[in-house]
Amino acid sequence: MENQTEAAAAERQPQQNPQPQQPLKTKFCKHCGAQIPEDAVLCTACGRQVEELKGAAAQPSIIINNENTNQNTLGAAQAGRRRSKWVALALCFFLGVIGAHKFYEGRTGMGVLYLFTLGLFGIGVLIDFIALLFKPNPYYV
Ligand SMILES: [Zn+2]
Image (cartoon, rainbow, N blue to C red; front, top):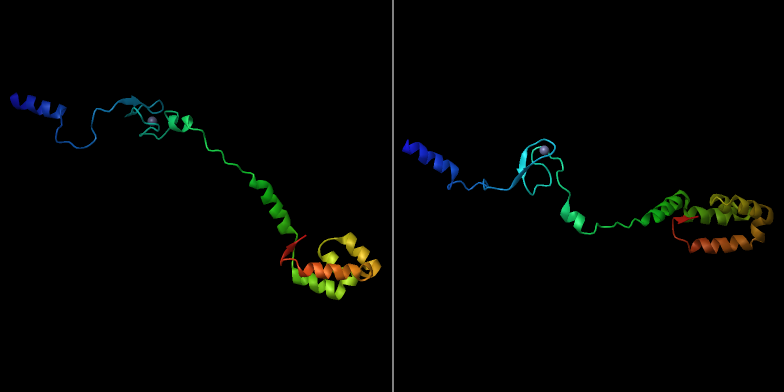
């Protein structure tokens, strides 16, 4: 009898047990009913959220300013109208009087104008050639 009561006492107060078997405040998961620590936000048994995220809610949420989207679409539009500087220069030099570099840039109206005026009487071609020289490669139209 005496041994049994000692054993029961030892069981109630496990002094040699370093594991976190301390009398934590517990609650029951509202989803699966498992006994979980009082401060648990996620159920340790089923993983579902049982508490509001107080800390996160108290602090102002981080606002991500996503104003880059406009620039991104602009970049995509630019990428679609990308032109090689050297091709444009060659076209302007050899076929500029019929507006080849204007057609190459997709400026059909200007191309037709160059075609009928022989590159704005040569002046337009000359100006375009010099302007193309200072453009980056590739450039965007
Ligand atoms: Zn649960």
